Image (tube, rainbow, N blue to C red; front, side):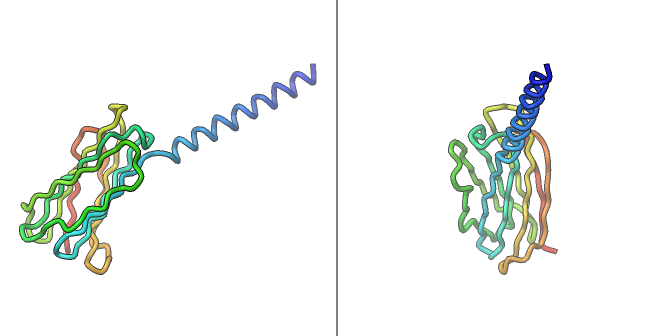
Length: 149
């Protein structure tokens, strides 16, 4: 009888240990879109979207950028190594001078993922000028407004 209790105790301990490892691994593998956008005025928009699903469950992340009239897109550096997801960038020159507005929309195969979009505005020399985080659900437009002080 004592042998059975010890064996049961060991088995239960192993189950608890392995279930916590798999939960930790799932949390560790949450998906993050993290592109960078370089603009013609030397500013950089560091965008990100933390998404509550695994990387292969993300279908696409759409970034809509509203920048001042005289600013254009020089380059967008997408998140590397996404197995199934696509990041798109659309730029509109309709923001007031010194203001930048991003809209982030996330789509997954799950249909109900939570997302947090973050926009960081960096100067030509890489100094952080402003940053904003906005949370919501997939399919919602997550609006972030940053500006030069």
